[in-house]
Amino acid sequence: MTERHARALLRLEDIELRGKVLDAILAQHLNVQQTDQYIERLLAEKEDKPKNKKRIIVKDIRIFMNTISHAVKTMQLSGIQAKTIRNETEEYIECIVRIPKTGPVANAVARPSESPSVTVGVEQAVSAIDVEEKVEDKTAPRIAG
Image (cartoon, rainbow, N blue to C red; front, top):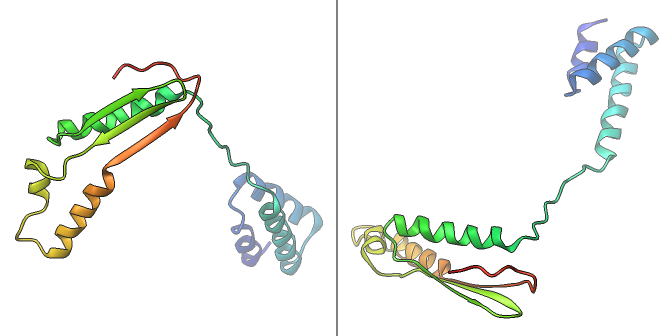
């Protein structure tokens, strides 16, 4: 086996597969060109296989509601006067998060000494955070606000 055989083997990331391919190279007395072709076929087969992407589907609405509550609590601990308004009907849970654009923390972020583009960016970011979200789920458990 030559250095070029070894270089061809390094193209394989899976160490177990490398060992199997090495055994095949030695058993079949493959030259470098044959080794390159063999490894190229293995890599092409690996790319053709669909990757099993697992998609997680959460059906418990409480997880989402807790995420919203946690985000609001984090803002409040930072001094932002954010608040959540929840309204539950037979058809959906309505969750409104209100984040003030003015106040001690918002004013501290956008100082007049900063460039105008930064101030506008902060104002746009704060207004983009003003969220009104409706989540529909008839089987959702009642969540106290």
